[in-house]
Length: 93
Image (cartoon, rainbow, N blue to C red; front, side, top):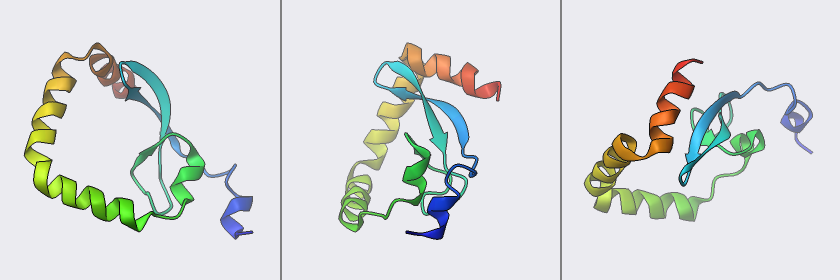
């Protein structure tokens, strides 16, 4: 057992709102751990080991499709009702 597992309850990850498809759900922004500043579904994921194969695969995909992904994300954030709601929900925090 690792020392950080004893203190998981005391680590205060920031709660935020995020999109899951067209719905809005509660998620957490990691303040510590290997996934610092990332948005995760559960606070325990901040300390989970990194899957090197997935990380390398996403790096290749981003190199190929970064422009296309950025355009699609920009359009989604402008038009998806859940995305528009998120702007206001997270702004208040």
